[in-house]
Length: 385
Image 1: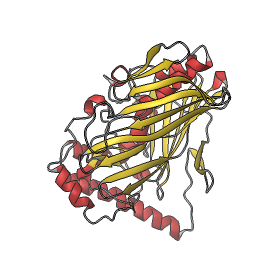
Image 2 (image 1 turned 30 degrees about the vertical axis):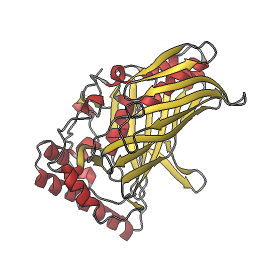
Image 3 (image 1 turned 60 degrees about the vertical axis):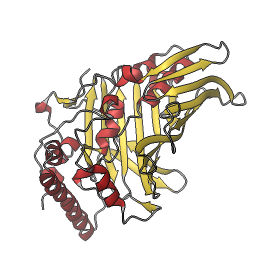
């Protein structure tokens, strides 16, 4: 039996999803809308799409693990350093709000990344920031992230558990799980969630991030509520991709200190209610424009055979070449190998154990993913400045 460990390390690296790629047709198959509607024709409203397998025609040439990782290491500005080096707790909190906004990226209608296979990893470095992701569960799909920066004394852990459902006129994905950003030298931990991903089919096509994101720091008593909004039926530029929210003190009757407003794909502003002054805390064009495609900097270091860009390399290359039959064949081979691995473990009475994370689940708290190692090592794949 051929497993993911037996596959040769042939990474296929693709450009990150950034603002200017919103209207890019590079990855789009012909007659995409017609194909999407045909694909969903037999899906009942309210259905859980977690196990739904997309043909390569509807895939981006990258894994969901890569998309999660890109939101951390693909930025033009050094937003994380600002979080760590702010002089006051409020300055640091405002920088964390800006960084949280930066992790939201535009997605193209009709295409989606691959569902990661069990044990798949994605390991990339950018400067002193090292990022590692692992798919720690397949059914249900759970992705874990660990990132460390020894220079800025930063540690980050994510546990993502998406649940997509079809509602007839739209697909709504609840992104469950917890995000933590730790500023170790300040002894501050910021905990936050993710907005929902909504794909609209009627009355107008579109992909939006919607819902409420909360950010809390227990050590300082500062919190934020960010409401992500979008168009419902008719285009309204003032609402499209907008953010409305506030920063407040949890220990002072939730008194609002700053009002947050703007658009996550343009600029976001914080208004100090004590002074009446406003300042731009996030500029999407500055943060996300001109970010380069990751490269293999040290091939001698060794790329893991579980690396996303290796596991899906043949599929991605076929999609980039628009060779849909080859893409389908390569993707089917990966899925068949996974089915064989599941059967083999079941026949031997073995349970799969993640390599880089300790995973637990409870009805009260959901999934939790704790990194086994204290820090993430540098990666042979590097995101250039």
